[in-house]
Image: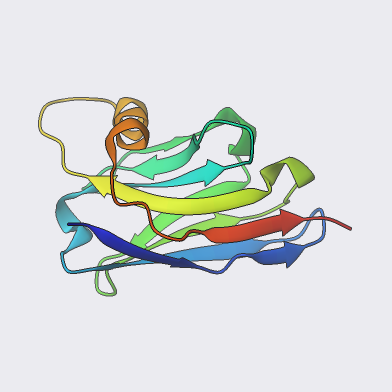
Length: 131
């Protein structure tokens, strides 16, 4: 079972930055598509960003393009989400998740599938953007 521990959230003013971290345990992320997802009360969980297993393809939600960057450190088995120019609407609980895929799906499709099918969501990390 995939297990993640998210961290790095907090309270930041609009325009500020945060770097979220997600450490995977019990398995290696090398062969998995990885992603960050956001949950806001009263709304469906949203896929924010995903990266292919090889790291050569990424997907970002339109709302974060140009501001957020997903990355992974294979040696540390860790996934990061650099969040810049934060806006109040970026607030929420951020989770990471992963899945292994065969075939030729786009990263956007894999991101959507992970959001629907992942069954081991962690505690997440809270991001609050407010002045």
